[in-house]
Length: 248
Ligand SMILES: NC(=O)c1ccc[n+]([C@@H]2O[C@H](COP(=O)([O-])OP(=O)(O)OC[C@H]3O[C@@H](n4cnc5c(N)ncnc54)[C@H](OP(=O)(O)O)[C@@H]3O)[C@@H](O)[C@H]2O)c1
Image 1: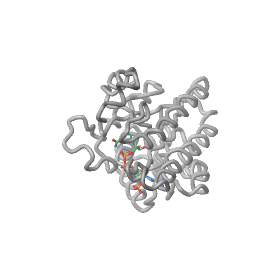
Image 2: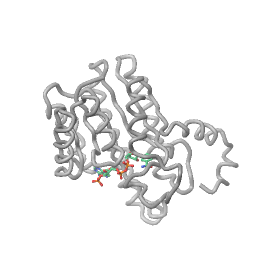
Image 3: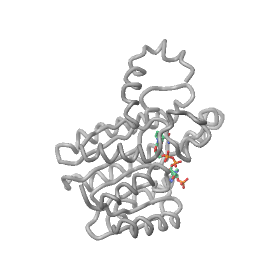
Image 4: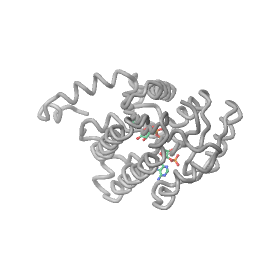
């Protein structure tokens, strides 16, 4: 796979590692983030270091107009258009905060579901005539089962995983890879302080490497690190009466 890739949510810790891996493999980059100046600095850095075309766009996922315009803007940002789209942005308010304040939960749904789905649909319409292209979005192991400590965020990721499964069924026959990424806890701004010194906290480079390998193999789902696949298979198989007693 080659060509330009839009990374929506390029300020994310995991997306930064992935963007570097994509640039290392020769992909041009269109980095879209809330902090446009920072995205511009990162694009300039990666473009220079890996000798790839790179552009930056400012984008807030809570702005419906900006969401609708993002894929067309990214398509026009670099010669040759897009060969891939990565959606990495998300919000994860504390579950107790959501229980106290419904607006926090609604804002999260707006970002994690409405905006994410709008970009994925827009990207699918563009890429479905481009065999060899790809769509990739960050879901989570949190979407596989509803935990009492994180079920609202998990529900947004469950919606995304289901959408990615359907998009894969729609686009795979057209030669387009649709990859749903399911990381376990990874070291990033989102998880800062949540899993102090946990040996299970993955490094962003590991997550990026797993995604690039899954894309190269045309996979539709990747658990990262790999051991989350068997862990989640066991957790999914537990009866609800047992699962709800777990202190997780
Ligand atoms: N880290 C983990 O353990 C883990 C596990 C499973 C799944 N994930 C998923 O992996 C993806 C990347 O997360 P991360 O771990 O790299 O966390 P992160 O560094 O906190 O990245 C989240 C990004 O989302 C962006 N964002 C939030 N609201 C936005 C909005 N309204 N408009 C535009 N951008 C917005 C943030 O932008 P700002 O930089 O402007 O704040 C930030 O760059 C997310 O989808 C997350 O749900 C992470």
